[in-house]
Length: 200
Image 1 (tube, rainbow, N blue to C red):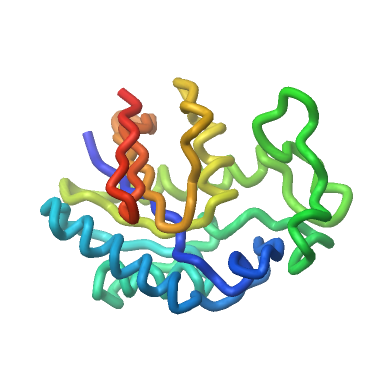
Image 2 (tube, one colour; image 1 turned 30 degrees about the horizontal axis):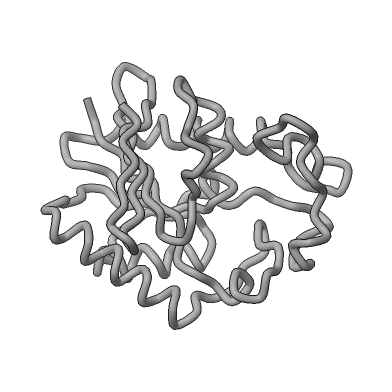
């Protein structure tokens, strides 16, 4: 069994301003930088040491990874970049489509506007992370991605339902176990509060 720590980036300017941020990018705020340092301290205190490091190709993720790990020897992967929200990019979040009744994601609501559907995002993240974990050795892997992409991935592989109170906030870490081609979510960690939601 191998361990993957899949983490969301720290707070960005667009997060702070309530703007949709998917394919477009914005820098980490000072708070976002501090969140990343805090997450790094949390992992270090618990003795979690990483082998390979990965980041999405977006600045907010790579900057977070560098602050968390103190390392620059990582690989950028397009496959774990954020969901593309099409024409809603950089627009106020309140303008986004609303979930359909009973839905757990935006499903295909962005597709007519040049964006991606949840299955498309989940599949590319799954394919990418499967390749990563197949190549990984015994040391845990750390990958920094994005809230929407992480949720789409979770929905793609979910064998268990998450508590609805669990949120993938800034710097939240999803700890997955990988074995024989399958991912299972072991715990969701909020390093900013120390809260841990056990999934197994």
